[in-house]
Image (cartoon, rainbow, N blue to C red):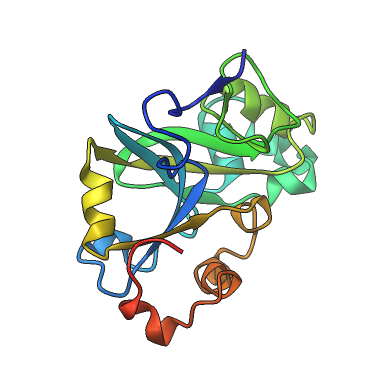
Length: 202
C-alpha cells in the first residue's frame, strides 16, 4: 500500500512536500551551501528531504557489492542506467542509510508516495529491481537525509535561508547534478545576482 506522507497534519496550501528548497546565498550552515533539497515530507512535526545536487564517492555498483546484491565481477552485467547511476549525499543525518527517490511506475509495499509522480523507497527490494533492469524508469539514490524539527524549517525560510519552489520530476532526476542549482533558479525566473533580495517562496 502506497502512503501519502505528511498531508494529514498540514493543509495542502501550507505543506512544502514535493517542493525544492534552494539554499540562499546567505545560508549560514556550510553543509548546505548551494544545496538543492527535495522535500519528501513536511508536516506539523517537522520535515525531511534529500539533497539532490551532491554526489557520493561511492557509486551505485559499490553499494550493491557492499550489500551483497552482486559480486564485483558481475558489475559488467548491470544495465547501463544502473551502472552509471550516481549516488547523492542526501544530508548529514544517518549517512549510512540509503534512500531511493523514483518515478511512480514502480512501487513495493514499503514505497511512500511523495506526489502523484514521485515515490520514496528505502528497502533493498528496489536496489535489486534496478540492478536487474526491472526498476522504475527514473531513479536516484542517496545516502543520508536532511531533517528539521517542528517549526525549524519555517524559521529558516523566514530567516531567508531557503527559497522554496514546486518540484518537477525533470529537474529532480536530472543526471547533470552540477547544473541543477542554476537550472532550478532559471526555471522560476530568478537571477542569482538578485537572489539575496528574494524572501521565502517563489
